Length: 124
Figure: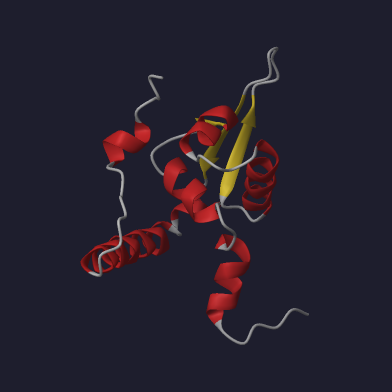
């Protein structure tokens, strides 16, 4: 039997990891293919992205549709259960924006992309 000391341990077991909250946030706006997610998350390798998607799928947060065609087409989406994490992600986003504001006040050069900049395809 698994024992947790605090509820946050159970939440972090599922949502922890460098990319999981970002993946969830991106999928909240609609289904995405693996390649699109990789473009939206600079710095993540395909191997790590797929590993994190599989873990989120195993935990019931993300669903996967395999269209069984050539070339392969797979889409990931947020499940109903995964949508229950929306409040957590919103709080994390708000805290992150406030953290950026405070760091700017302290003189750190830091930028937060707008949603439009984040979702626009790279034209280069």
